[in-house]
Length: 164
Image (tube, rainbow, N blue to C red):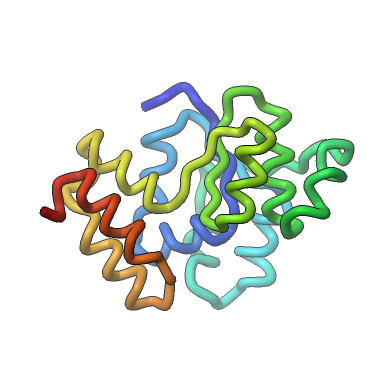
C-alpha cells in the first residue's frame, strides 16, 4: 500500500468494475477520490450501464468538487470530468490521477501530475501480488468493448512476464 491519494476518472472506474477489480484501488492507495461530476457520470447518468451499480455501492470512494479556479485552464483542454480529475489532483500535492484518455494524460503530465491508467493499476496489482495474471482481465475488457492498443497490451504483458 502506498501513502498516496488517487483521483479517478469514469472510464478506468468502469473498466475496473467490468472486470470485478475495483477493490484494487483501496489496496494500492490510502485514499480513492473522484470529483462529484465523475460520480454523477458513472452512477446517475450511467445508471443501468456497466459499472454504475458497482461504483455506487463503494463505501471507500470519496467525492469532492475541485476548486473552480483550478478548473478554468483545464476545461478548454479536456472534457469536464477529466478537467475535474486533474484539478482535484492539483489541489492535493503528491496525488495520482487515474486516467485512460491519452489527451487527458498528456495534459496531466504538462501540469506535473502523476498519472496511471487501468493497465497501470493491473500491472501494479500483479507486481505486488494482488492478482496472479493480467492477460485474462485484458481479454475480458476487450470482450466488453474496451479498446486498448495492441502495442500497449504487449508492452505491459512483456513487463510482467506474461509475453515472451
